[in-house]
Length: 92
Image (cartoon, rainbow, N blue to C red):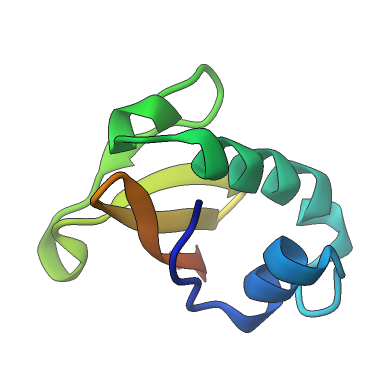
C-alpha cells in the first residue's frame, strides 16, 4: 500500500478511482503501476518487464523510478514495506 502520494491527480486515482488530474492516455498504465505498488514489499518487486525500473541518483537519490509513457515516470521510495513519496513526474 502506498502510504503517501505527492501528485494530487495520482492520489485521486489511487484513493477515489477518479481520473481527474492525470492525462487520460496514462490512466490505464498508472492503474497497473499503482496496483503493483500496492502489492510490493520492497522496491525490487517493481522490477517487472516493460517498466524500466531503476534507482535514481542526484537530487532524487533514494528514489526508484518506473516508466509510464514517453517522458512520464512514477517515482517512489520504500520504507517499512510500503511505497512512500509516490509522485508522477515529467523528467524533461
